[in-house]
Image (cartoon, rainbow, N blue to C red; front, side, top):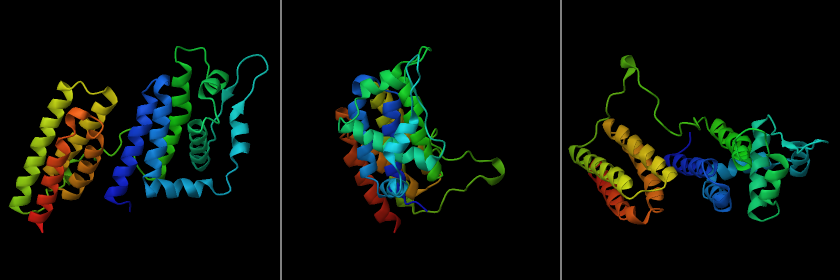
Length: 253
Protein backbone atom coordinates (compact mmCIF):
# COMPACT_ATOMS: atom_id res chain seq x y z
CA UNK A 1 0.00 0.00 0.00
CA UNK A 2 1.33 3.41 -0.94
CA UNK A 3 2.30 5.72 1.92
CA UNK A 4 0.76 9.13 2.63
CA UNK A 5 3.99 10.75 1.47
CA UNK A 6 3.76 8.73 -1.72
CA UNK A 7 0.19 9.91 -2.28
CA UNK A 8 1.26 13.51 -1.89
CA UNK A 9 4.12 13.10 -4.39
CA UNK A 10 1.78 11.50 -6.92
CA UNK A 11 -0.73 14.29 -6.30
CA UNK A 12 2.03 16.77 -7.18
CA UNK A 13 2.68 14.79 -10.39
CA UNK A 14 -1.03 14.84 -11.30
CA UNK A 15 -1.15 18.58 -10.70
CA UNK A 16 1.92 19.19 -12.87
CA UNK A 17 0.29 17.19 -15.69
CA UNK A 18 -2.91 19.21 -15.30
CA UNK A 19 -0.88 22.42 -15.46
CA UNK A 20 0.41 21.41 -18.88
CA UNK A 21 -2.93 20.04 -20.09
CA UNK A 22 -4.73 23.26 -19.17
CA UNK A 23 -1.89 25.59 -20.11
CA UNK A 24 -0.59 27.35 -23.18
CA UNK A 25 2.23 26.49 -25.56
CA UNK A 26 4.25 29.52 -24.49
CA UNK A 27 4.68 28.03 -21.01
CA UNK A 28 5.14 24.43 -22.16
CA UNK A 29 8.88 24.24 -21.47
CA UNK A 30 8.48 25.11 -17.78
CA UNK A 31 5.52 22.78 -17.39
CA UNK A 32 7.42 19.86 -18.95
CA UNK A 33 10.27 20.53 -16.49
CA UNK A 34 7.78 20.54 -13.61
CA UNK A 35 6.41 17.13 -14.63
CA UNK A 36 9.91 15.65 -14.76
CA UNK A 37 10.77 17.28 -11.42
CA UNK A 38 7.68 15.76 -9.79
CA UNK A 39 8.72 12.33 -11.09
CA UNK A 40 12.27 12.75 -9.83
CA UNK A 41 10.98 13.72 -6.36
CA UNK A 42 8.69 10.69 -6.08
CA UNK A 43 10.46 7.36 -5.36
CA UNK A 44 7.22 5.52 -6.20
CA UNK A 45 6.88 7.13 -9.62
CA UNK A 46 10.58 6.85 -10.35
CA UNK A 47 10.51 3.12 -9.59
CA UNK A 48 7.45 2.47 -11.77
CA UNK A 49 8.88 4.38 -14.72
CA UNK A 50 12.27 2.69 -14.31
CA UNK A 51 10.56 -0.71 -14.49
CA UNK A 52 8.64 0.33 -17.61
CA UNK A 53 11.87 1.48 -19.26
CA UNK A 54 13.47 -1.95 -18.96
CA UNK A 55 13.70 -3.52 -22.42
CA UNK A 56 11.74 -0.57 -23.85
CA UNK A 57 12.94 0.48 -27.30
CA UNK A 58 12.24 4.19 -27.46
CA UNK A 59 13.38 4.74 -31.04
CA UNK A 60 11.26 1.85 -32.28
CA UNK A 61 8.12 2.92 -30.41
CA UNK A 62 8.58 6.56 -31.40
CA UNK A 63 8.86 5.47 -35.03
CA UNK A 64 5.61 3.53 -34.73
CA UNK A 65 3.83 6.45 -33.11
CA UNK A 66 4.75 8.93 -35.85
CA UNK A 67 2.31 8.11 -38.63
CA UNK A 68 3.37 9.85 -41.86
CA UNK A 69 0.76 10.43 -44.55
CA UNK A 70 1.52 10.98 -48.27
CA UNK A 71 -0.83 13.90 -48.99
CA UNK A 72 -1.17 15.71 -45.67
CA UNK A 73 0.52 16.15 -42.32
CA UNK A 74 1.02 13.09 -40.17
CA UNK A 75 -0.60 12.13 -36.90
CA UNK A 76 0.59 10.64 -33.65
CA UNK A 77 -0.68 7.21 -32.61
CA UNK A 78 -0.11 6.33 -28.97
CA UNK A 79 0.48 2.71 -27.93
CA UNK A 80 -2.51 0.94 -26.40
CA UNK A 81 -0.48 -0.74 -23.66
CA UNK A 82 -0.15 1.45 -20.57
CA UNK A 83 3.32 0.07 -19.82
CA UNK A 84 4.39 1.35 -23.25
CA UNK A 85 2.64 4.72 -22.95
CA UNK A 86 4.51 5.55 -19.75
CA UNK A 87 8.12 5.12 -20.99
CA UNK A 88 7.33 6.59 -24.41
CA UNK A 89 5.94 9.83 -23.03
CA UNK A 90 8.56 10.03 -20.29
CA UNK A 91 11.35 9.78 -22.90
CA UNK A 92 9.58 12.35 -25.07
CA UNK A 93 9.40 14.79 -22.17
CA UNK A 94 13.08 14.28 -21.39
CA UNK A 95 14.02 14.95 -25.01
CA UNK A 96 11.78 18.04 -25.10
CA UNK A 97 13.47 19.38 -21.98
CA UNK A 98 16.91 18.66 -23.42
CA UNK A 99 15.93 20.31 -26.73
CA UNK A 100 16.46 17.07 -28.63
CA UNK A 101 12.84 17.36 -29.75
CA UNK A 102 11.65 20.66 -31.17
CA UNK A 103 8.17 20.73 -29.64
CA UNK A 104 6.90 23.41 -32.03
CA UNK A 105 7.97 21.32 -35.03
CA UNK A 106 6.58 18.13 -33.52
CA UNK A 107 3.21 19.81 -33.01
CA UNK A 108 3.17 21.12 -36.58
CA UNK A 109 4.10 17.75 -38.07
CA UNK A 110 1.89 15.39 -36.04
CA UNK A 111 -0.74 17.27 -34.04
CA UNK A 112 -2.47 19.45 -36.60
CA UNK A 113 -6.19 18.85 -37.14
CA UNK A 114 -9.27 20.20 -38.86
CA UNK A 115 -11.15 21.00 -35.63
CA UNK A 116 -10.98 24.15 -33.52
CA UNK A 117 -8.38 22.78 -31.12
CA UNK A 118 -4.83 24.10 -31.27
CA UNK A 119 -1.91 21.80 -32.01
CA UNK A 120 -0.81 22.13 -28.38
CA UNK A 121 -4.28 21.16 -27.13
CA UNK A 122 -4.16 18.08 -29.35
CA UNK A 123 -0.72 17.18 -27.97
CA UNK A 124 -1.95 17.58 -24.38
CA UNK A 125 -5.06 15.51 -25.05
CA UNK A 126 -3.39 12.75 -27.07
CA UNK A 127 -0.09 12.43 -25.16
CA UNK A 128 -0.16 13.94 -21.66
CA UNK A 129 -3.68 12.82 -20.69
CA UNK A 130 -2.99 9.13 -21.51
CA UNK A 131 0.35 9.39 -19.68
CA UNK A 132 -1.32 10.80 -16.57
CA UNK A 133 -4.15 8.24 -16.76
CA UNK A 134 -1.72 5.35 -17.19
CA UNK A 135 0.11 6.36 -14.01
CA UNK A 136 -3.20 6.77 -12.19
CA UNK A 137 -4.26 3.30 -13.35
CA UNK A 138 -1.07 1.62 -12.13
CA UNK A 139 -1.48 3.21 -8.69
CA UNK A 140 -5.23 2.48 -8.64
CA UNK A 141 -6.03 6.19 -8.48
CA UNK A 142 -8.81 8.10 -10.20
CA UNK A 143 -6.66 10.49 -12.22
CA UNK A 144 -9.59 12.65 -13.23
CA UNK A 145 -10.71 13.19 -9.65
CA UNK A 146 -7.27 13.03 -8.09
CA UNK A 147 -7.62 11.72 -4.52
CA UNK A 148 -11.16 12.77 -3.75
CA UNK A 149 -12.62 10.42 -1.10
CA UNK A 150 -15.23 8.03 -2.39
CA UNK A 151 -18.81 9.13 -1.68
CA UNK A 152 -20.28 7.50 1.37
CA UNK A 153 -23.49 5.54 1.39
CA UNK A 154 -25.90 6.12 4.29
CA UNK A 155 -25.73 2.45 5.24
CA UNK A 156 -21.94 2.39 5.54
CA UNK A 157 -21.12 5.93 6.59
CA UNK A 158 -17.75 5.95 8.31
CA UNK A 159 -17.78 7.09 11.93
CA UNK A 160 -15.24 9.74 13.00
CA UNK A 161 -12.12 8.24 14.55
CA UNK A 162 -11.48 8.60 18.27
CA UNK A 163 -8.81 11.17 19.04
CA UNK A 164 -7.96 13.33 22.05
CA UNK A 165 -9.90 16.53 22.70
CA UNK A 166 -6.69 18.56 22.31
CA UNK A 167 -6.07 16.99 18.91
CA UNK A 168 -9.63 17.91 17.95
CA UNK A 169 -8.88 21.50 18.92
CA UNK A 170 -5.90 21.59 16.57
CA UNK A 171 -7.94 20.01 13.79
CA UNK A 172 -10.38 22.85 14.27
CA UNK A 173 -7.51 25.34 13.96
CA UNK A 174 -6.37 23.68 10.73
CA UNK A 175 -9.92 23.85 9.40
CA UNK A 176 -10.09 27.58 10.17
CA UNK A 177 -6.72 28.12 8.48
CA UNK A 178 -8.02 26.31 5.42
CA UNK A 179 -11.07 28.57 5.28
CA UNK A 180 -8.80 31.62 5.50
CA UNK A 181 -6.56 30.22 2.78
CA UNK A 182 -9.56 29.68 0.51
CA UNK A 183 -10.76 33.25 1.06
CA UNK A 184 -7.31 34.74 0.49
CA UNK A 185 -6.87 32.62 -2.64
CA UNK A 186 -9.87 34.34 -4.18
CA UNK A 187 -8.72 37.76 -2.97
CA UNK A 188 -5.16 37.27 -4.24
CA UNK A 189 -6.36 36.38 -7.75
CA UNK A 190 -4.29 33.20 -7.87
CA UNK A 191 -3.86 31.46 -11.24
CA UNK A 192 -6.82 29.22 -12.06
CA UNK A 193 -4.89 25.93 -12.06
CA UNK A 194 -3.27 26.68 -8.68
CA UNK A 195 -6.56 27.93 -7.24
CA UNK A 196 -8.21 24.66 -8.29
CA UNK A 197 -5.51 22.64 -6.51
CA UNK A 198 -5.89 24.74 -3.35
CA UNK A 199 -9.69 24.36 -3.41
CA UNK A 200 -9.43 20.61 -3.88
CA UNK A 201 -6.91 20.18 -1.05
CA UNK A 202 -8.84 22.47 1.32
CA UNK A 203 -12.05 20.54 0.65
CA UNK A 204 -10.27 17.22 1.19
CA UNK A 205 -8.69 18.44 4.45
CA UNK A 206 -12.10 19.55 5.72
CA UNK A 207 -13.53 16.16 4.81
CA UNK A 208 -10.70 14.42 6.67
CA UNK A 209 -11.23 16.72 9.67
CA UNK A 210 -14.89 15.69 9.80
CA UNK A 211 -13.68 12.09 10.18
CA UNK A 212 -10.85 12.94 12.61
CA UNK A 213 -8.55 11.30 10.06
CA UNK A 214 -5.21 12.74 11.18
CA UNK A 215 -3.18 10.78 8.63
CA UNK A 216 -5.20 12.08 5.68
CA UNK A 217 -5.11 15.61 7.08
CA UNK A 218 -1.32 15.37 7.41
CA UNK A 219 -0.89 14.05 3.86
CA UNK A 220 -3.04 16.76 2.32
CA UNK A 221 -1.53 19.54 4.46
CA UNK A 222 1.90 18.54 3.11
CA UNK A 223 0.53 18.81 -0.41
CA UNK A 224 -1.19 22.11 0.37
CA UNK A 225 2.04 23.56 1.76
CA UNK A 226 3.82 22.54 -1.43
CA UNK A 227 1.25 24.48 -3.49
CA UNK A 228 1.22 27.51 -1.16
CA UNK A 229 4.96 27.97 -1.68
CA UNK A 230 4.19 28.87 -5.29
CA UNK A 231 2.06 31.85 -4.23
CA UNK A 232 4.01 34.67 -2.58
CA UNK A 233 0.95 36.13 -0.82
CA UNK A 234 -0.02 32.77 0.71
CA UNK A 235 3.35 31.35 1.75
CA UNK A 236 3.03 32.57 5.35
CA UNK A 237 0.25 30.04 5.95
CA UNK A 238 2.74 27.18 5.61
CA UNK A 239 4.33 27.83 9.02
CA UNK A 240 0.95 28.00 10.78
CA UNK A 241 -0.23 24.78 9.17
CA UNK A 242 2.96 22.89 10.02
CA UNK A 243 2.95 24.16 13.63
CA UNK A 244 -0.67 23.08 14.07
CA UNK A 245 0.06 19.63 12.61
CA UNK A 246 3.09 19.11 14.87
CA UNK A 247 1.16 20.20 17.98
CA UNK A 248 -1.79 17.97 17.03
CA UNK A 249 0.44 14.89 16.78
CA UNK A 250 1.99 15.66 20.16
CA UNK A 251 -1.42 16.09 21.80
CA UNK A 252 -2.78 12.88 20.26
CA UNK A 253 0.04 10.62 21.50
